[in-house]
Image (cartoon, rainbow over all chains, first blue to last red; front, top):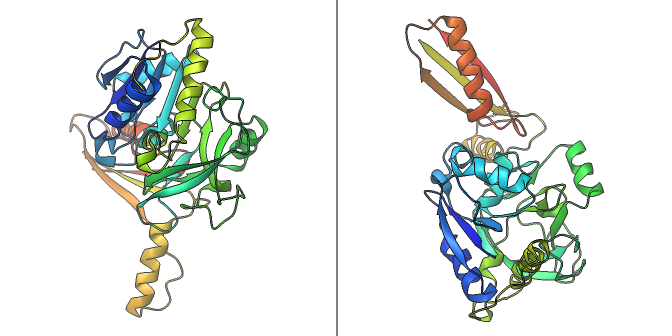
Length: 241
Length: 81
């Protein structure tokens, strides 16, 4: 089992993701420079947070033209796992791998704080170790996390169970006050129809250690590891911790 | 030859930046402004040997594939010269 963490000019959560995969998930992981075009050695690819291409034009808009993104599309089409976090989520939307778009926060500010998320679908490869209704504490750090989509797309997301995480309050209620950025229907994370591509604005890789305030993010990476093991028939060799 | 591209948010998409600008206009004391929508403007210099039809075709393609996101934005192309 091997993870790849994509690196674009301006990525800045790549090392956090690498750290979590190697230390807490205990799996082999490589950085993959955005000019690479071969992902054949990997079982999962993480599109990390940051400011790819300085967020020029629109967040994630220029990263979609990086050579590696063609390979990422083929990778996802082959059923392998792609996990976009924050800017990674924006890139996957811009690349058309996830529906909708992320626009400026309702309040205009860059928001960096812990928020509560409710697990909306525990049948995805990214949430199998969680239960629907679980409330996670995971930080957000973004200025453009306001998820928008048209009504048809929204209804399709709901019907297919593609809404994976919603912003909620401490007891798991989906309220307007708990919505940090104005995202439609408090959407914090969605997956594609096949469930093998997930994008989320919050940073689970920043919530894997008690000293950082929460380790709720670990269950997402553990779920993904189990899914890879089940899909490939290879049981994970866990090292580190 | 020059192509100009205007990219604007679709009417159905809220524009928090436009709202903030509108608020500032109100603070300035200017009345009569009902709404502000923020957009983007691009100028592209294209090869002089191209016909204006070619320039329009190329600019339309760039506007569609690069400069705008069809989920949230519309674009308009103008060709000079």
